[in-house]
Length: 354
Ligand code: SAH
Ligand code: SF4
View 1 (cartoon, rainbow, N blue to C red):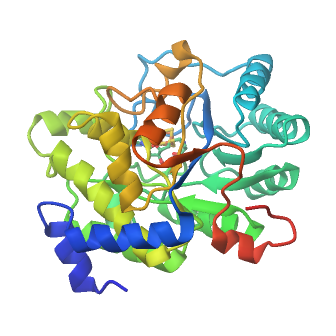
View 2 (cartoon, helix red, strand yellow; view 1 turned 90 degrees about the vertical axis):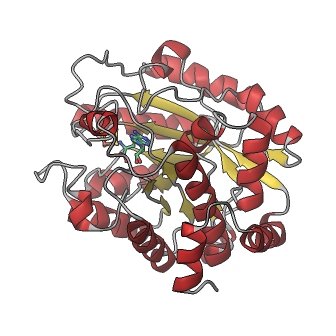
């Protein structure tokens, strides 16, 4: 187990400490071997009712063309994804509160489950309780919802304090997702301006205690049409790109050691920053050695993909490129097995396949 001092020393060190990497890799090999589970990601809409200060698809970004994928098109995507051999998919989008949106999501989950028998991850923000319950009942068993930053004071540096942006509701939704039975994925946004190592330490403690089945963390990357970008240009950013990249890798290693069996995603944002310094294979190899065991190639059609612009220069992680990059990074890409985390499997042995 890592002590507070050990974690703070790791976070402050210039590089990834060798003994941290060795320990994380040892734990990873014991529980996941060299396997990396691929989830086919479709970003179904860039419409969002919120205006998080860091996010490029925030409602107040009036210059962005909005899209909402059609059912038939998603059906075709699902068919292609199946042909490639995937057993797990992920669906993501902005937060929308409307009956029409909920019914569309129900229809999609039914399609994904009944026709394709996918294991489904969803990520659509803080939806109402009855909607979350129904989506679970229809077959979506995994939910990704980052808390972003655990200090409430800091949370409101990046969000308005209004009925759409409510810290308590975010945390309450996380707890609710667990109670409903979802495999819950959560995490933080690493290296936001005006944040410090001590904030990261608090985030780590929360995750350690919450014990999520999945960890989804990533570095903050500025986006031109957001209020935070202006602060960046004024030189107020505290962590450099390289620091945010290394901090994310260090957090992955810390979570692998602390949580052992949870799935950890090598996020697109991590790959976006990492490939500014190293080739893709090297970035993946580093992330996997630190303990990441999931990646999510993006299947959103290319014209929509460009509009799902959470941050600048987002890496377009196509299937083939990723599949071979995982192989070339000396790990084993897995499509046909669900890759459910051991912790979740133990809790749900009757209904869950590994
Ligand atoms: N609307 C949903 C899901 C889509 S956003 C939600 O917010 O939960 C998914 C994630 O993108 C967010 O949790 C946030 O952490 C991340 N994100 C948004 N803007 C970002 C940025 N500028 N840099 C890096 N990640 C960002
Ligand atoms: Fe909307 Fe999610 Fe972006 Fe916030 S982070 S503006 S909720 S898409």
